[in-house]
Image 1 (cartoon, rainbow, N blue to C red):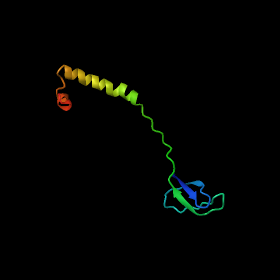
Image 2: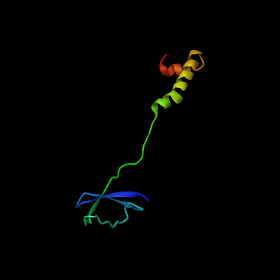
Image 3: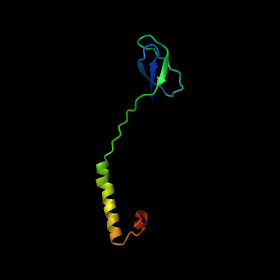
Image 4: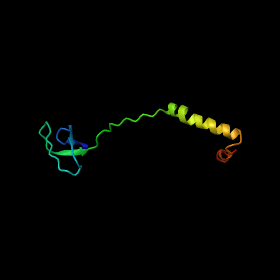
Length: 85
């Protein structure tokens, strides 16, 4: 069930509410007694990690070395057209 954030117009406090659909009617009451709210965009809680050094060392570098070796031995002549040599 998605979590939606609502900001109380009276005191500007953010209240979180679970809803099945964003169009469902919601009954919220703030601690300050306010009953008027505006839906806000919640913060993203996903963490993205990317190990560029590991990707380079484990995937890219071996492929580059293999391609360069094949070009030097005359096996991959198609790559010569890409690099312009």
